[in-house]
Length: 316
Image (cartoon, rainbow, N blue to C red; front, side, top):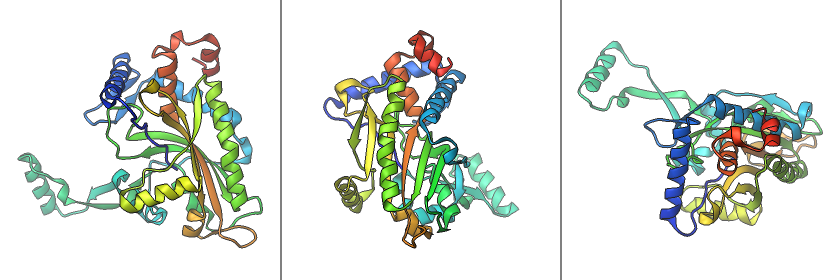
């Protein structure tokens, strides 16, 4: 799955100023810790407390024990990554792991280049791992074969990477997704997506956020990508729940994404339904950092001053 980015509409310069001001406020308050790389942050304990509260709110409307819980590391096998076809659609967002596998002599050459300020990464080779782009991607190989009659319902939570350096704090390069995934028949997948549009709105309302469901598309790359995006919208495969972080300056920031994949992952990973058809899948992804930022933007960057019922709900 993919949670989209805020889309500029009118006064881009004013929007950029407001985004940078919000980022500065978050850094000055210590909620986020800046680095030398745009879009890469550390998180304070208080920020993590907010994320934990959001996670509890999501769990309260989730499927509970009906879903199999999985937590994966932020890297997964390159072979699995290649089977997702992510590199074909989003090469500009992809992150690969490289490492040194050379000899002592080659290591000496690397050190010599580094000592004089030259590039040293040409001595690195691709590893057998990639950075996870969507929290659900590592799960699909587990279900190769035939599913039970009711399919498979998953609860997945983990870090994701997208190479989107930006000063808008809502466009982090590394972020967390809590996903609920249904693998099964086409009807099961569509019902799951539609149900979670309502559940997602319920979660956001519980957190006192005003959200709007919007038919959307993923940021596919290139000319072919524009055709894929148009088809995705035409077939109503992706709905985002958006919050106006920056008022009327843009069209809103997606904080929850509800997606139908059709039979893409079922065909790719050899997953069949009990009646022998290629499995369909759907996922809903809660952008944990984005929801936290929406709360800080809406209720203020000092959570001690949030409304008492909300603080109690979040255990702050």
